[in-house]
Image (cartoon, rainbow, N blue to C red; front, side, top):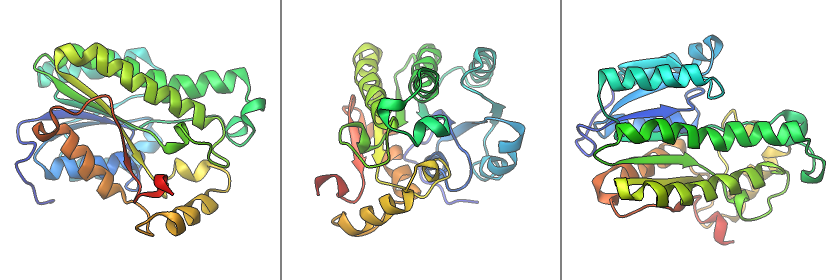
Length: 257
């Protein structure tokens, strides 16, 4: 069992996007659990459940449910269970991104309409749908976090269509922060440097991106999922109660070089 602190004692939240123990969402789950939060988690399919069930057990998740963000029924069922069991939600962490392989590996110029729509729907609009469902449960305020990458505002070789997609995600964070701010709901994006996760490995020439990050970052190392999780725990905490609408870079300084 992980050692726990009281930083987030009493807070209850949902983490969406845990693929396996190496995913950013898993790092967030561990960090928030260690800080005392109670966590609900989801899995995309029965196949993915085999990989993330041990993580759910490790963080003693009282709610473990299927969620394909394209399935409105699953999303409604999930929030219905959260409302019935907890009656509230203090935080939501969205760590989902997807683009069909052919469109991901091709030029932005060549991206198909269907590929673009799919990438935007799963990677961006899913955040908006989740925020809409979470809002009524955050009657006492709350925190919504998503995961971006600095390819949103700078051209990164081989990041391709995910650059515009992440730019849309970060813009959505700003608009959601303004719209939900009166309800004391804060919205921010975590922007780690390149991480060796299953999702990022789908990027063409990803090994080159990793090597560049190690060489050029002032700290000369990669960010870890645990470090991203620690920052997420801080943003969920009351210590960050005035932080909203930001994209927070956690990349060892790579973005300044």
